[in-house]
Length: 113
Length: 112
Image (cartoon, rainbow over the protein chains, first blue to last red):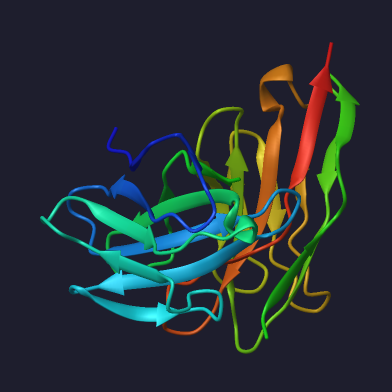
């Protein structure tokens, strides 16, 4: 069964450092998403991506964040200068088209120290 | 804006007990409603969905009915198993976009 894969499963980084979280969406899917969940809080939408551009982003997705689909298979989330409050589980998801039935990866736990 | 409220966890039940996890929502328009499940060490998986009022979503013995009058989508299962132990997330999607709005999740632990 096709699945969304995320790497790494756990990333520890120092405050102020840049991190790149990687995702491989399901191959015939067209829409891609990042969500995050701070420990004990809700899963929050960050950004959606379609046709090589951002289609929607939340207030959380400020200038320190960026997304890219560099090679037609990977979908990355870059955090330029990490802050302690960026510590969270980050989930990648994809959908085949505009239907909302999203397939999620296992998540990357980001710890900023 | 849109929001989802779930009952607080953790919920601990004995095997074969009846499960209800409450979920209510606030949304503009007519949302589609979902339950996602996260088993230990795994990603979020779609459990069931309902796209219009009075629809009942069902899967693996779980059910939820889209109640527009009470803005609710409570998850139920008649007889839980140890293998149902997981975190359950209620979510909605509105309008033309595919963005999901999630609740905080409810951890379920089923014991023998």
